[in-house]
Length: 195
Image (cartoon, rainbow, N blue to C red; front, top):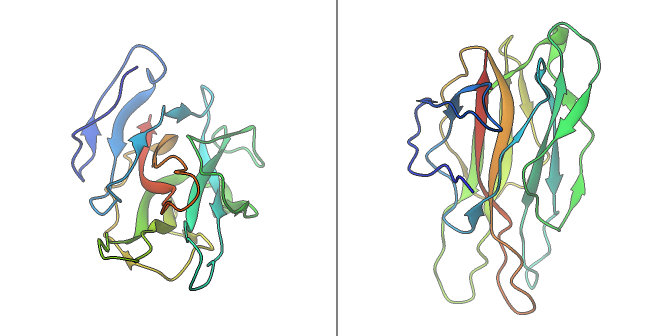
């Protein structure tokens, strides 16, 4: 299992002869949460790119509840210039929440970058750790698609932009801890860029 580690917030040149032979770089942000492990990346089918996105979000659970907020991100892939979607891909997602309706880049555009809203670690007795609470995606025409996440946390800076288009996704997820544990679900995100 190849885990992509030690990446900075810049686009990193990378190519692998296996699952990601199309990937030319990976884009990241610097404000992701610290918990969990990186799941296996998932790629759009050959000849297609991410043109839309959907978000899995758990609504606020109230003062006594355990919030996880953003639990997953799903990319919708289409061939260049095509309308509609040919497939959907997602890296690992958390168990809480519901999927939003897909949002699409206008005029048959594609995704090129992203930003995360993240609650910084609280590390206080009885605090509720949440990690990633929302995400924004930049389209090739500068349109922004924003998830229905919660207001917790702060927006980080935008990732670098893919030179061409997003074609894959990798998430950092904290697995469920069971009763009386503080779960965070999605902590961080990486997108893979293709020509």
